[in-house]
Amino acid sequence: MALADALATVLASKPGPKCTVSRLLAKLDPAERADYEAALANDELSAVTICKAFALEGHSVSRSPVERHRRGGCACGSR
Image (cartoon, rainbow, N blue to C red; front, side):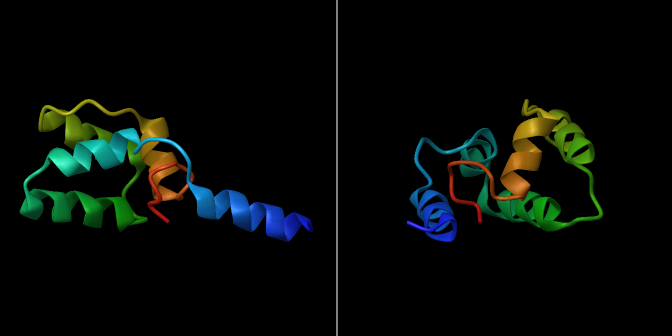
C-alpha cells in the first residue's frame, strides 16, 4: 500500500467519538450553532477568541480542541 493510500484510509476512517467542539455544538440551539460554526470557519478569528466567546456563554472548551476541529484533525469528521 502506498503512503498516499494509507493516509487516505486513515483520514476516511475518522475513528473515535465526536470531539469536544462537536459535542458542544450539538447542545446549542440551531441558530446559535450556526453562529458558532460561522465563527469556527472564519480564519480571521483566533481559537482563543472563539474559546472566550464560548466561555462567556457558559461553555468550557480550550484552544487545542478548537484548533484541531478547525483543521479537521479530530475524530468527529469536521473535514
